Image 1 (cartoon, rainbow, N blue to C red):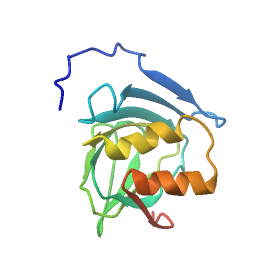
Image 2 (cartoon, one colour):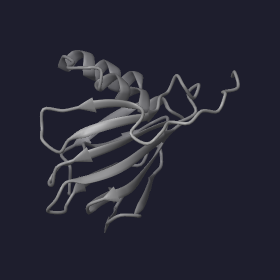
Image 3 (tube, rainbow, N blue to C red):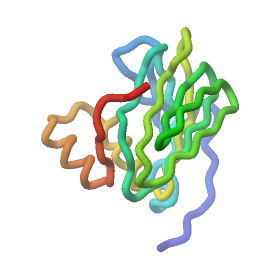
Length: 151
């Protein structure tokens, strides 16, 4: 593996990805290619009630750090809830899901290490995909969808 040079992403920097929903956007801060696959990190703002997929990653651990709002997490069989400063660790091969359970928009910083699962996020934010292409990329980047979000 080639050593990475350090770099700084300034406040408001990174790749901004808007959405058609009010209060929903992402700032991609550390991209897979920039870190040579070590880490992928992005900030995501989501409206109240937004839920993730119930899923797992076969090749990456995931961390979610709540920056604003209130979120609930299901990691394995454990459910918890927290506001700003809450940090959730979702190990590879452990089913997990999250939900903005507050009444206002929320923000979370997500990190994947190694970055392979985050590469799927980068690809999805490039634009709409067919169901077939999305399913192919889920498999390629080690994601497994497990059913409806239980939160």
